[in-house]
Length: 287
Length: 287
Image 1: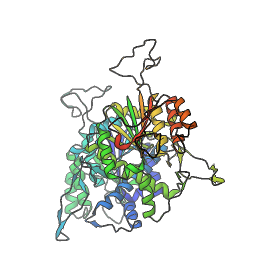
Image 2 (image 1 turned 60 degrees about the vertical axis):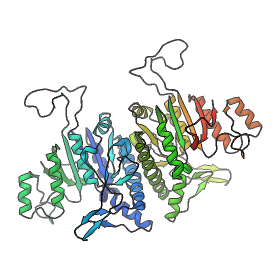
Image 3 (image 1 turned 45 degrees about the vertical axis):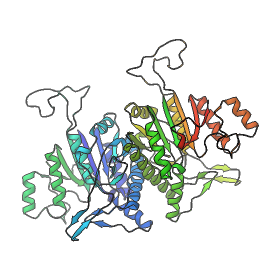
Image 4 (image 1 turned 180 degrees about the vertical axis):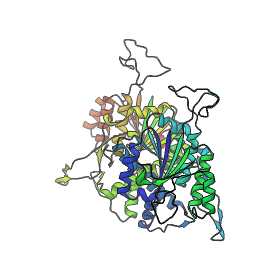
């Protein structure tokens, strides 16, 4: 089992929440990968340097100066602070951008038409990531040695440029890539039985992979104002019903759509929960 | 052979020099490790944020805000920019702080008496590094897979704190640690001959390790105003003579003393040269 866990910038920016999260994350046994944001801190840093953060449809317009700031904040302060905190909890973490070990490549986004503005927007040094551009072999070589990759949202294009990418997409891309990575274990032997869906024709094995999104709610809620109204489990058909009933609406629709795409591509399940509940089973399981 | 190469902040801050250096570094065959500074940029960043850099005897006094800035600059921007540039040259680099993979631990420096000020100085979040606190096994596992570690001057104390350390000392500590690291090669076989100094009793081998300091001069000079007056080779006895003659003076004395300490501890040779000469044999060889 490989667990891929994503936390947002609001947790990274809250030292009490982060400390608790780090303890809970360190306590998870087995193979695990952390993906973190840092957007709150990046905006603060931009302002302290006299820059005005520009966000269009939730994405940061990233000119040269902004790229420098987000790289410093995500890949510098956030990455190394979290890594040092995990090390102190006995978790052998390694803070990585996509450039490190050529772990993740991104493609610079071409200017896109933004409906709400009625014009094309050039996001600058912003990149898009696909699961095919994740170097699963390198990541697995770390996991195999008990090392825990901690990814930030800075990736590279292979031509010397850094690109600002979306941490949610990195999380799903990494989870999909790890779910389909076929490893040869020195200990386990493929059963080669007819019913087995675990191993592939060449006798290599795949790991069941779980993707956990930690966000500011306890899960998908029946009533968005009632944190106790968590929907425990949602299958793809139930998701369609919940959309039709208007229970899943707005920003939750793309979140859940992306989760089901990851499941379609081999991720065993996606769990949506609050970061403070990482250590317990509170949350919504999508599968 | 393992080459450990150190560049200072003045090269990192000069894009033309850096580009040339990256090309030359990428072209070096075999196992190699880069250690980089970033002090020039860190001071600029502090000033742009309204902070005044405080240096005492060449070391930056590092309070909490300064630690954040140096971590952002060294481990964020400098580390990821250099790593992405190396990747573009086909060199599979990985940018690391000491916290990453628990690569290097540092010990927080206690307040020290500074003669020139006549008082004790608390440098804050400043750490000291020894070769014993370098995780040579982890570094070797990367080198073995063709991955090139790129270290910045940020390390950790193992208790969750980041510490600002001296890049020159990291370079010599890493070189000493790698020189004494005993690996078991699947290809090479220990000769077990009586004269062999290469392998140890258990049949493991060590790599000859070379330490290269790139700085702003072409090497150790007979005449400090004449860049062509490079002394090609200096042994320990010649070093004593050069000191007595006043040819090696001031800041060069601790530089060379540290180099000979590294040689004493197993590093095959130390080379002092200008970064632009990485691709040729111009420079001073200490051995």
